[in-house]
Image (cartoon, rainbow, N blue to C red; front, side, top):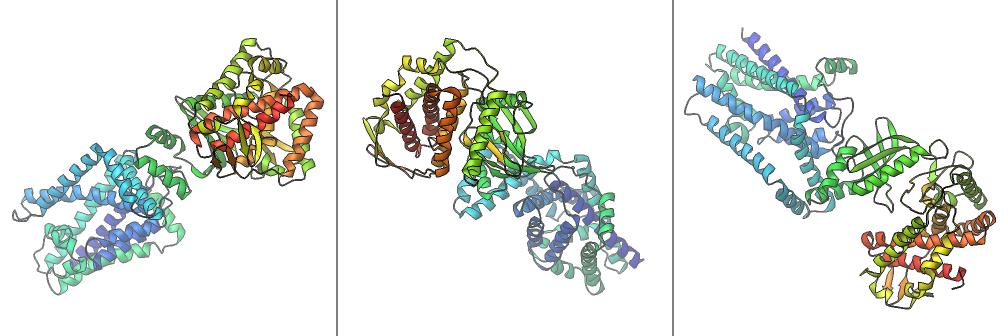
Length: 638
């Protein structure tokens, strides 16, 4: 009979451990597919360490060992183990009081009171964390900031994991969670009862409460499981208790050595009901991007943005951020279906992106455009995913990696394709439209520049010296921007649908096909829809060196001197010369001068954004405006 009870106790204890494993997997399976074998090893190792070391150090091992193999990291491993133990406290408290009220335990045993106090402390702490979450987040950020960047990120990732593990408990299958918990404790209590009967048959007189108290009493925390078990009874009973604790752990290790097919069959029978797709704890793969996000979250910055960001990006992994000069974000991403580019924006920028998405859909059959895989527009948000082509590169890199004549041929093909398939859709334009364009795109931006504190000192000089060369400053170029002159220059512009942001970086070339290209990122907010605005965007690159400026990290300003490393490439010079000749041949010399003036407008439109978002480099882009405006003044004989 003793052997029968011992065998039953072993099997029931092992069953309890396996149901604990299934419950633990439920917390993990929100974010990734759990590896049952590896988690079983982590649990077995944790129990083995608890058997030899005090203070539940095995749980630390379980968190670290499992977290190292999890996509979400060690911090997430700790969070799931804490959740597992958090739930245990309530059941242990419940059972202590059931034993007390049923008369099985002595009323002098204070373990039930201690666990009740611990439960009250935990629920109070939980409620305080919810009520004081914002101040606590700031405190966490401040404390983590005392360490180096790597430790700071690890601390914030753990806290983020802990917050989300508790917050996303509602997304766990609660019926399955309840079933796993009840079955786990039923198996454990059955095992405790069986081992107690086994010990009693040896004359010890132990009951289920004695075993329960052995495992969850005060001594169990400060001593090793081995020392507690060894101190319960003597002789054969010690060996029985120690064997009872060790054999299931060994069995758990042996289960992980089963053939792959056997383990898969066991997993399918006792499946956790995990989803076919998993969310990311954080979508960013780059540690710097994660650090920036978590610093904003715990610093309570951009709360609405961060919530929306997670809402649309939680089921993808962000490989790299390719965002450039707009308020929309463009990222290289991947999910279970493959790699793609995602672009998104919120608020007014989201409305603008929605217009961009509609433009791409409208002209997708007539122009070479990026392939839209999917997209969505909702209140205050728009996003869409673009097909990723590993052979594709932006025109800037293409120009500087291919012979110039090939790049010129591509540019001619772009101009010819747009002329025949987009610009041929001529439209009429009222004088009011042109007046609105001049007022909102030129004079409004001039006012913002003149009101800028960043450029205030520079604007006080008649002359500027940019990298040692003299230029007339903006106040000296007033004649160039006279209203009547602008009306005269722009009045003969052709009007048609346009791309609106035809910069070099918005042209994508495919290196695996001759002269293959497509366009991305149109801009619909131009008011004066003339092909000359598109050509002026090309000039902003080829003539104004916009891409090279974007790669220049700093500039210096001393009185009326602006100095920075202005880079020009021979390829840009050759393509610019050919582009001027080609456009003049098609449209005439007056048209080219209008295009040059539109380039000045593009630089004016750029300046408020740079003043707001890039104060340190704003003088450099102002220098770009001045150089282009001086060239335009010479072209018009001013």
